[in-house]
Structures are given as C-alpha cells and as structure tokens.
Length: 182
Image (tube, rainbow, N blue to C red):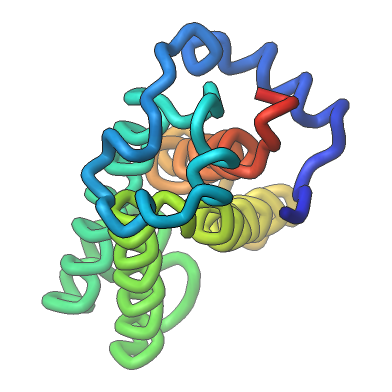
C-alpha cells in the first residue's frame, strides 16, 4: 500500500476533521460486496479500519452526486454551463469541445466513486485520483485569482472548487491509512 501523505499531514487532517474521527467503524463486508469475502488477506487488511465509516461513505457518495450533476450538466448543455456558472465565461472564449472534455472528466470521477463505493478495495486509488483532480483544479483557480488573470471570487467558487478539493483530500488520506494508523 502506498502512502500519499506524511504522518504530519495525516495529523493535521485528523485535527481539522474531528467529525470524521468520531465515527463508528463499518466493516467493509457490511457494504454488500460479496466478492471481498473470499479474500482473507483483503478482509484482514480492511476490517478494523476506523476510516471505513458511514461518514466516509456518505462523503464519497456526495462527491459522486456532485460530479455526476456537474458532469451531466456540462455534457447536456455546455453553452448553458458556460453562461450560467460564475467565472466560466471569464476564463476564455466558448469552446463546446473543451467544455465537454471537462464534463467527461467529471463523469469519469463519478464512475470511479461508484466503483469505490461498490468495491471498497478500489477506494484508496480512486480517492487519490479524485483528490489529484480536485486539488489541481483548486490550485489552478487560486493561482489565476492571485495573478489577477481573473477577479478574486473565492466565496463564489468555494462550494464548487475548494470544498470538493478539501473533501477529496480528506477522503484520500482516510482511505489510504493502514490499520495501525486508523
């Protein structure tokens, strides 16, 4: 198992997300994935991980719903997305192909989240990839705002840009812990 965060980073996330640390453990086999039952090594690794909780699963589900809604909106109506979402039009001229590419990226993230919910063994990799996208996206927005390429609009962008980055990085750290760290 690879580690994406140092012990210092894990401690910071634990301190800033106390709601997650108070959650009751939910064994992976309770998620309804019968295929995991045949692998004792998998079960011994996943059982007892306090990071597998109803709150973690609920946050991952919320991220799936968010990415599906945004991705669907982009794919169905890229012009409406371009004109109605604050800051999108300020990023450059309308390009339906490019906007739909972003929609496909969001739908790919949603599919990964569904797979992680259905097959918990995939959750560490899926949450790491999801965090990579959302944190990279948030950094891009922060750099553009700081360089005055776009007007500072962090409060408007917080729910759609920065909150998914925070949730995904928290889930990544929590799903990538070893049982000893849990």
